[in-house]
Image (cartoon, rainbow over all chains, first blue to last red; front, side):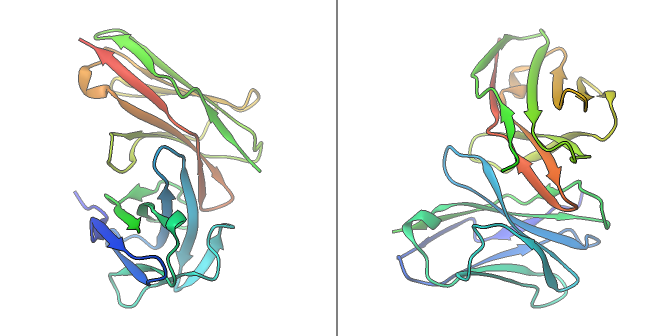
Length: 114
Length: 110
């Protein structure tokens, strides 16, 4: 069964450093998303991406964040200058069709900022 | 701010019984409703979705939607210890964004 994959599973970084989280969405899916979940809190929407551009972003997704689809398979989230409060699980998700809201999540990357 | 509300639990149910999980949402424009299961330290796993008022059954799971009351529920019949997890209610806001509730932690006691 096709699935979303993410690397690395755990990333430790120092405050102020840049990190890139990687995702490979399900191959026939066209819409891609990033969510985060701070320990013990809700899953929160960050950004959606379609046709090589951001289609929606949340207030959390400020200038420190960017997304890119550098090739036909990868989808990345970059945090330019990490803060302690960026420590969270980051989930990539994808969905197949326009207006198809069924989103399938990857296993997540645990980001720890020290 | 559009919200999705769930009782955080924990909800404790004996094995073989019916577990009932509830969710309310504030955005009347929402059209799509989802239940995800999340095991500790793992990612959300989609288990049910419902778009129309009424009931939708899939195996041991039944989702119920009442748009007039802005209420979604999930019933799990014949609960198994492997059903012990946190259940997340999610509602679409706009075309692509999902808004999640806090989740209800369910424990099935053998």
